[in-house]
Image (cartoon, rainbow, N blue to C red; front, top):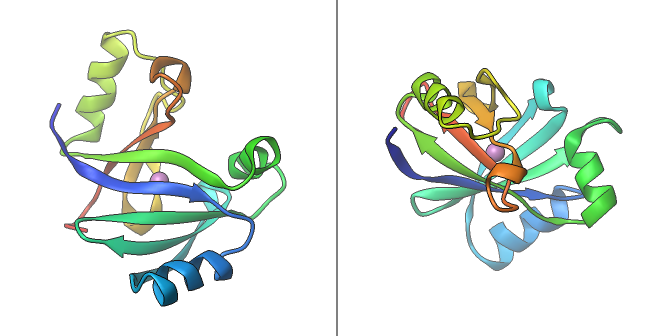
Length: 137
Ligand code: CO
């Protein structure tokens, strides 16, 4: 498989506005808009940082995986997303290699992307997301 770059760092937050104020007003970064990803029960806000971005994650339901993360660990870095050229091939390759996946099949992500999460038990404690964008992003 070919990994192209770090697509984004996902950061779990309890409210979108205070961290947006920090990153956009105090750190002079550029907001790339917000989107509700209903499949993952989160509202996301992207902030551009050079070739990559930050993905602020706000849960939209009590049973959102991000809500559970906030309960257990509080706000902070939630996952690392790597952009791949071909997510179907990447998922098959990892399964064949015995790597545990949370998503056995890619599912819908933000901005029309397709994503698949690897299991932290297989990735040394880091929740890794593979993402493939429909268009350059
Ligand atoms: Co993400």
